[in-house]
Length: 128
Image 1 (cartoon, rainbow, N blue to C red):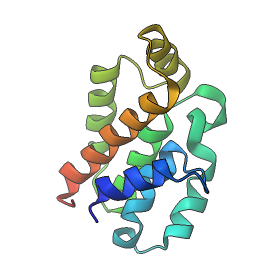
Image 2 (cartoon, rainbow, N blue to C red; image 1 turned 180 degrees about the vertical axis):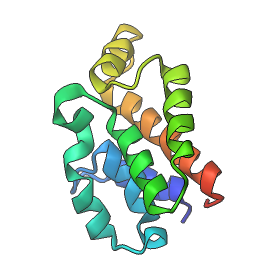
Image 3 (spheres, rainbow, N blue to C red; image 1 turned 90 degrees about the vertical axis):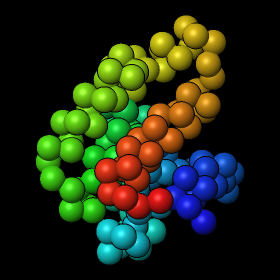
């Protein structure tokens, strides 16, 4: 299973809720030298913009994965700038507000943010 397929399965799981950060980090757990459960636990509080509409959980998950995979800090700045350029902001609440204004429902919007961030990590690390 590819990481994209793994992420899609996590987001579709109705038994366990995987927040945006978890759905980005868990597929890279083995590569980071941790269990999937540890990846789940360490990103538990990052969904919903850290629970308060702040920085997008998918973005925080991608930053966590990049660090856990030993990527240089310069990748952080590149990811944040790319995310901001493509989405207009990095804040969860503002992203959701813009999605609603476009008529996009929350889950498809968040799934798109997760996919975008996971693809960045895959591209930068060469992992598929």
